[in-house]
Image (cartoon, rainbow, N blue to C red):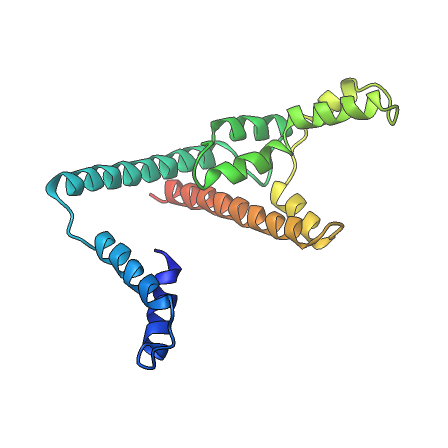
Length: 188
C-alpha cells in the first residue's frame, strides 16, 4: 500500500482544521480514492483466480519442502564432497528460498574449484591442476564448519559475514532435517 495515504491522513488530522494543508487536502483525497478502490469487494472471477493462485503457491511450497526432505536424506552436509555439493545445488530449485542457498553451494562445488584452479594456473600463481585436484574433489568436508569458520574470521565488510551466517543457518536446518529423518526411520 502507498505510504502517502498514511502521511496524508496524518497531515489532514493534524492540520486540516486550521486550513494549513495547502495541496495536502487534494493529495489526501486522491490517496483515499486509491485506498478505497483497493479495498473494494472482489468479484467471483477474482476470488476464483486468487484461490487458484493460492493453491498453486501452497503446492509449490509443499513440493519444495518435499524436495528438500528428499535431498536431506541423500546428502549429508556434515560430510559432503565438492562433487556432491554440485549435485545438491543442481537438484535445488532456482526459485524461492532455496535459490540463495543454491548459489552459495555452487561456490563450494567441484566445478567452481576446477575453474578457480585453472584461473590461478593461467595467472601463473600455481602449477597446472592435475590429479591432486581431482582427489581433493572426492574428499568429504563439513560444510557447516567451513561456513562458520568464514563468518568467525571476517576479512570483508559486514554484508558478506551476514550472508555467510544466513547460509550457515540454512545448512543447519538442512542438517537438522536429515537428522530428524534418520531418527524417525530408526524408530520402530
